[in-house]
Each structure stands twice: as C-alpha cells, then as structure tokens.
Amino acid sequence: MKHAYLILAHNEFVILERLIQSIDDERNDIYIHFDGKLENYPVFQPLHAGLFILTERIDVRWGDISVVKAEYALFEAACQSGRYSYYHLLSGVDMPLKSQDYIHRFFVENKRKEFIGYYQGDMTTEIDRKVRRWHLFPEHFKDTLGGLSIGRKVLRAGWIRMQFLLRIRRNKDVNFKKGTQWLSISSELVGYLLQQQEEVMRIYSHTFCSDEIFVQTICWNSPFRDRIYNINDEGRGCLRMIGWKDNRLEEWQDRDFEKLMSSDALFARKFGGKHIGVVNRILNEIVK
Image (cartoon, rainbow, N blue to C red; front, side, top):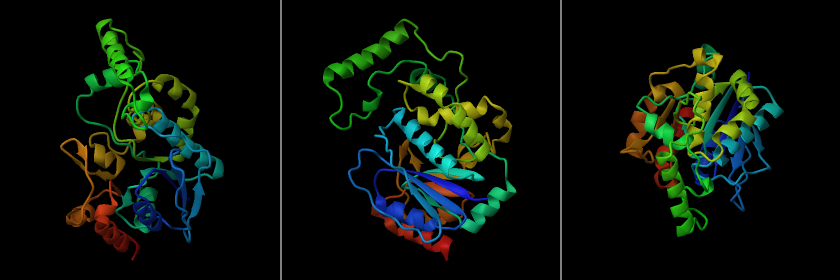
C-alpha cells in the first residue's frame, strides 16, 4: 500500500524542495500544511507522487495547541483522500536518509509497529508545568508577531505561580508521556487519534508544547502500546536523527554526512539553506 508523507512547513523552502524530490515516488502521496501566516508559498510539481496542499491553513504558533491542530488537519486530509499503510509526520526541514525502496521494504518487514519516540529522562516536573496547569496567552509563548505587553507577561507568570501556590492542577488522572512530535504510524493508529480529537482539544487547551505529548500519551494508554517499536530509545523509537546539542536544535552540516548516512535512522532533522551541501549529498545518495 501507499505511504502518506505529512509535512508541516513554514520556511526554508529550498530544503522543502529537496525533501519533495527525495520522496517523489509513485508509492507515496504528499500532504503539506503551510503556516497560515504565510502570504505566499512555493508551488511544487512532483513527477510521481501525488501532492495535496491544505487549503484551510492554521496560524501555527510554537508551543501552542495550534501545532496539534495543524497535525490533525494533515491526518484528516490524508484519511479523506485515501488509505495508507503508514503516515510519516515530517517538518519542512527534514530529509530521509534511505531510499524509498529501503523505506517501503522496512515498513513491510515491520508492519503493525508504531514508530513513536518516548523521552527517557525524568519528566515529572516538566509534565506538571506544561499540561497540569492553565497557561494564559499560549499563542504568544515565543512573543512573535508583536508578542505580549509587559502587563500580560506579568499576568501569565503570576497565574502560573498562583496555581503552584494554591496547588491547582488539571488533568490529574491522565498518565502523560512525552517525546519528539515527528513520527511514523499506521493507519489504525491514525484512525484512533482522529477518534480522540475532541478530547485532545479539551485536555490540551491552554497547555504548553502539547505537540510533544498528546500522541505519546494516547498511544501509551491504549492497546497500541504493545505495537511501539522501541520504548527504550527515543531516536530509535521514531527512526529519526535529530540534531540536539546542549539542549538546542542545530542544523546538520556537510561534516555530518557520513554519520547521517551510516545511521539506522530513516529520517533526520533539521537542515537549512546555509548548509545546503549536505542536503544535496543526501539527495544524490538516496535517489541515484
């Protein structure tokens, strides 16, 4: 069966172009959500894969539930257009590290597995702050597009502080898990996520970084837990190499090419136009 590639894009379109070229295969359909803040976005014409651009675009804000809404928009669009064996959620600055023959063969060999990364450290404090408290003005976590007034910043911080002092907690009965939002999951799990959409919006409204929590939590607390590919290694669990260094996400460079290509991961992020050389080398390697 076909695969659906679901892409959240907002910048670095030279990387997005290479990404589309790398997955341009008749066994794939590509769905792209361009951030609603964009006035213009590029037009791509793959030769083999189907391409669907979401017309109803969401103003995606970092850390806000709008990220989750955009993901759901992609899942819904793909499910309405066709049925796929796997759905791969990528950002527009990702690249595959293997050929499409390799990737399709891998998922045939590992069918019914769910490729979701689970964070391995102690997340008690983080979970308590992010999803057990009410956050004000969540669309302005990064203070973009004018940001918040000083008064609102003080109000937001004060409200969080008050909840800690008064021991106000929400979602107390939910067993939360977290990990990277980028994943590859089966059609059955996508269908299950869509069934949970209304509940997800209720639980995660006015929370922080729910895009890194909601899928992990739903899967962990469902029969799909037994299908998780690897629960002990976040990177192997989602088949992705992500360029974290000192708690910051850095771009892969040309010097990282051998490291990337020799890994067991199927995808990597993030890449940028400043280091387009490594992207071109990866593209040439996997489509030759």
